[in-house]
Length: 410
Image (tube, rainbow, N blue to C red; front, side, top):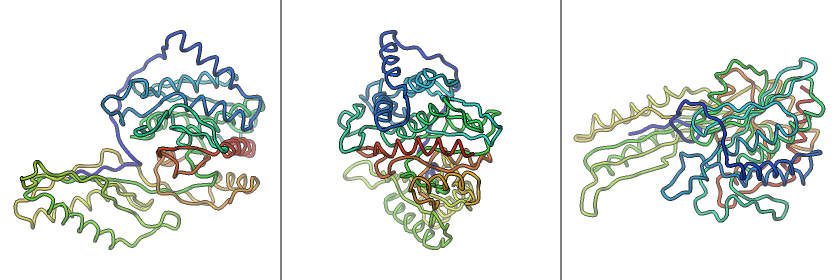
């Protein structure tokens, strides 16, 4: 049995440092596009130009690669170069920090004028797979929406952060603002984990994910897999029943997130049409609460599996530790960033009441490092990873303007 804790997925990180190199023709062409998107202000037209540019650059996380997929789909480094060049073109200080091969973080900084609390804005460069999509990297505009892979998750947030940074560059805010476009959020969070190990510290944080411009300050996370036995399907079915009963027994809830959840996300078994299945492999996703600790959760479910194996003759169950464990996030409604962003929401006609969501993000790593962080961004999470992914253009525009207001009030 295999338990896999994660916001979503996992990966293996390679440590290396590279330089960005592209053929001169392609790079010049991209620079021309960047110059055309340098904004005089924040409006829908500027959003369309910048977001179209970002969507047109494939940046699928390499963990989702399938046989036959073209190489150019999996190039977070190329998108990082576009983001970095765009920011540099408007005079912003930029650093490209490689976490692994083709896995950079882009770090942009604006120095505050009055020593007010420092802030980090974070979005991610990578997207999920594009299986079944038609022209996923060709931006399409219809009915006030921009369609394409990454349009809402997370390139709309990147665009909002970048446009807000462009406004702040012209008139710096009271406190320092650092924008990080991180790699590998969709699989194992290596980008934000790497950045959080640096000596830099921030007093407040905003992690960009689609929240329909609401303030999110809580989320849940975790996962697992069994295998091997005589009539393994029957044994696996018994294990599922045991796990379901355990979840019914757990009555603890969170005011924003509700109860923890356990979902079997994969079940593989069988060797042939006339052979009793000798092995079964199950994978589980457990979304835990802020009051729970990942390793303890895994141990409790591993023990249930072990107890089953002890009373079921001939059955052997192997429980593997989670390959990614991302703790649930929870910060106080009295936190400065919550009050600040809630006030900005109210001023822009958005419900200021904080809410909780069940999906994962890089925010958990920021909170774990003591940074009071909320999740905020344009678009609806329902559209993320979908075949017709889109974002409302007007929401991206409003998000950028709201971010500027947050920075100026900090």
